[in-house]
Each structure stands twice: as C-alpha cells, then as structure tokens.
Length: 219
Image 1 (cartoon, rainbow, N blue to C red):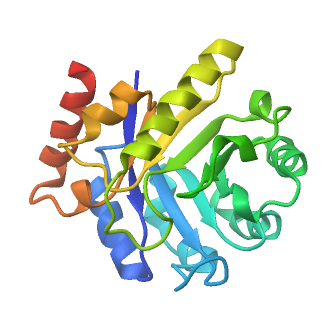
Image 2: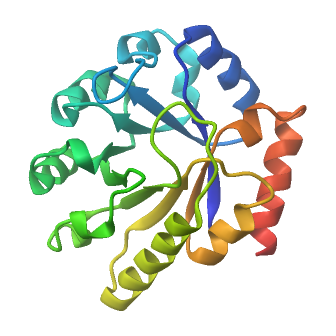
C-alpha cells in the first residue's frame, strides 16, 4: 500500500521541534532533508543539531542527503539511528561501495535522482541491491517548485523497469506534492510520497494528513 511521509527541510532547530510536536502520534516515519552547504546551499540543520532533539526518538527516521561526500556524512548521522538513507547519486563516486556501507550498518539504502538526472546513471548491478529510488520532481533545493510531466514519465518508466526485472526497490517521489497531484503520482507508479508544504502549511496537520491519505487509499 502506498503511503506518505512528511519531509522536514529547514535551517532552524526550533522549526524542527515545532513540526515534530505536530506530527507526534500521526505518523511513524519522518523524512529529513540534510544539506551540507557544499553540494547545494545554504546548509540545513546539522546532525549535531538534531542529536539534541529528544522528540526525534519517537519516529522512524529516513534521511535524504544532499551533501558533497555522502559516505563521510553517513557517519555523522549514525547517532540518530537512521532506518534508511537516500543520497544524491550525482555526489556518489562508487555506487556499490555506498550501498555496501549502508547494508553493513543494517540501514536501508537509496539513491536520489536530481532533476535532469536520468535512470541510466544507476549502474545495472546496483538496482537489485537498492531499497529505494527517489525521483526529484523538481531541482533539489529549498522548495517552491512544481512536479514536471517529464519526471512523472520517468517514474512510470522506472516502475515498468522494476516490474519487468522483478526488483524490489520502492519508488519515492519528492517535490511539490499536494492534494491536486498526489493521485497522478500514484497512477504513474510512486510507492512513497515525500510531502512537505501540503502538510506543514495546512491549517490542521491532522486533517491535512488524513485528506492526503484518503486520496491514497481511494486510488
């Protein structure tokens, strides 16, 4: 069954805490976007910032790393007990080594494709080892974009390729997802929808999540 996961993407520790309080009891997973200020800028909250937030212990945590050196950055977030880590493929020198490091740590491994990056950048021998492939529906960064038809078509192609080859990875879509386009994301083949503003800017977080999940369950 497809599902949504709230994304947290901010420079402010207080904003993280504010959102955690709102999400507590409503979702089990959170998707935290971390930026080092080098791969793209500005930098987000840091792992050391997050380590101080006790409320994080009430959630299963997935991280989307938009950092220049993912392998070294992974070590910085191990104290946060990550369940899954997804990194930008454009920043990874050796995909097999990256996946192996995460598997050795018992962490689910994923690759993210930025806007403009095609599926062909993923090495054929890596597909079977991945738990997730994340498709950015617009350029990775600080939000405000809208999903493009081109990227939705990529989601469809990726699903067809997965099904044809009996791979087990799940497809995550991220970027501008809301109640108006969530059904299209599902129809094109998304398994997990990383949702930001459509949740956090809702007048009532609980009702916002319920509305989005209702669309998912009806699909």
